[in-house]
Image (tube, rainbow, N blue to C red; front, top):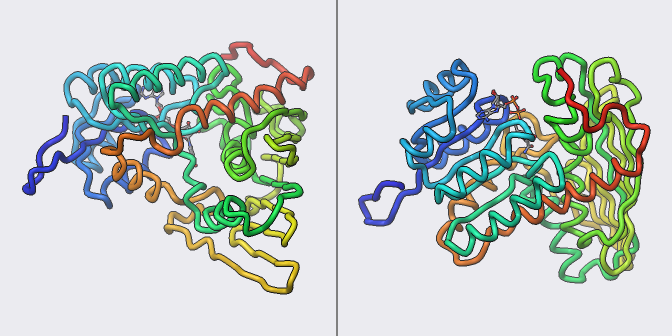
Length: 348
Ligand SMILES: NC(=O)c1ccc[n+]([C@@H]2O[C@H](COP(=O)([O-])OP(=O)(O)OC[C@H]3O[C@@H](n4cnc5c(N)ncnc54)[C@H](O)[C@@H]3O)[C@@H](O)[C@H]2O)c1
């Protein structure tokens, strides 16, 4: 797996499985980082071919064939949610490092299965990482630093909001996104999961979760929820609330506020910290320029870091268990929402 560079160090190689919308950002990052892509795969031959042509590589329609013939050292999994674990397990079993798009799985049992497989693979030197790229946004990194160093003092609480616009056409273009069995959920599982991950990263694991999910606007187009609210209690007792909707008329920047003993921090694209003693600080979002900064455009930073750390003995710092924690928290909200339509059914 991989070639050898002129300096004699092994050059990792990449493959992308799932050649839809998000694969473009992976492809752009791999090109910019000069990481050879030895193959791409999609069950749609046209999509596989289109991305293969763009990258000057070989197209496959089966992940097994790609793994057996192209032998990539890293597999980027960019498939619909219910196709994450099957493809991820194939990659790990074949000895390839795994870089997996969110959510790690469409259900808690599947996520748990993958945690176990990734742990076993880690012991064989095979790494796994989850694409929670917003952890690389400069405002979020600074906020983490301020909280973890104690610079903000004791945290009193936090709130976050994801208010986005998704049309029936968005779901019609990719029907899996609106179906429980394939997406595992709606706005929480697909969009706000990034912000939930930030809350768990910043404030610690959830010791209790409750909330409610419903479909207010898009019920004609989707089975899954378009709106939800969550109340999280984090280890240590700090509480946070998250509101998420795809029924907003526009894609507003994600907001996340942390109120603490020595000041308050408000992230709304950029970060503004207001200290109680009158000082203030701001950190610009300075996106990597994909034009989609409202949902976080740090894919390239995360991918670069993942490859840079492949030789580390330690697991990648955003692991499958982090992804499983977000899926488990979301499942608790769904379980507390008995009126969700069609959950668990297979829709055509
Ligand atoms: N990190 C982010 O900010 C971000 C943003 C958008 C999407 N995503 C995630 O990326 C993933 C893909 O989303 P998308 O919007 O690109 O979806 P998409 O439907 O545009 O692309 C998915 C592709 O996977 C292919 N596919 C399905 N099953 C397959 C299989 N078994 N093997 C190979 N290919 C298969 C489909 O034919 C399709 O082309 C999802 O997990 C989504 O949540 C992440």
